[in-house]
Length: 297
Image (cartoon, rainbow, N blue to C red; front, side, top):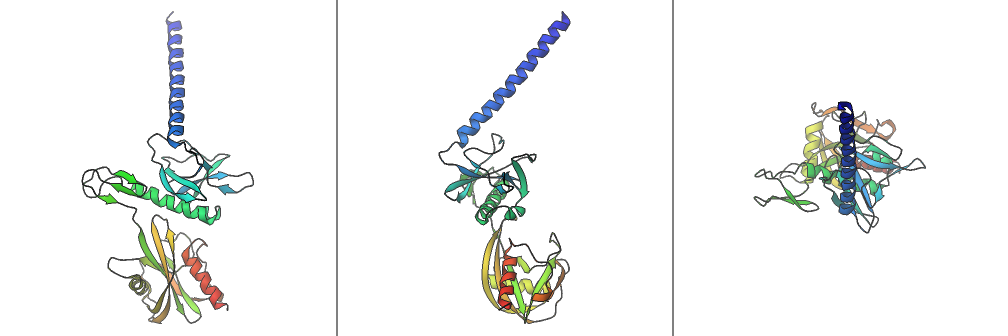
């Protein structure tokens, strides 16, 4: 009789657990559909750290998930951010607490690598989503009084205690292509992930103009003086939240003396003897390609 009672209790417990699991799953689905339901479909930017969730297509290509509800499981307290619009549809973003396992339908791809998989506009929107999520993680508490922040707008949080408002911070950095006759200055920074060489770069400091930043960074990192500093272009750089501003300058004097803690190598290169260059996604590469086109004419 004891054995029979034990079996009944075990079966009852098992039945309870199964029903509880079904109930919780059902609750989640109802919550998800209620919270995320909308008349229009949305692009979904789902990140685990700096990896972006992409959908595998039958033809071997990749695409952003698109639909009315999130493409993967989302816990109830997940914050979903309205990022921008893309091709007439809303863009929504949220972070995963842990990575998903690769499946026949979805895969996580590094944000940089996604440049090779997505249309440019989609990659740029993914970059913005990544910046918003980075800001959200790093602005949970008021920097003035420590109170948990409340989100009031898509890119604004406010402290309910002291009223402090915060917006996504953007770190501005310069890039400079230095010309000397038929050559340009290329350097390899110690923090580069790879053997490629790129342009001198550095962050804008408080109280200086962009042109002053260009002259200072070139002098600090290479010992060279420059002149004829002119604006080239700019590029959002979501690694994690930067804006790259590019300039062209001419060599004005000095001998190369590398800032050892920043650079491992640096020299002037002609178009016929270039080292490995940055990837196409970067403003630095766009500037180098522009110089190559100009020097070929």
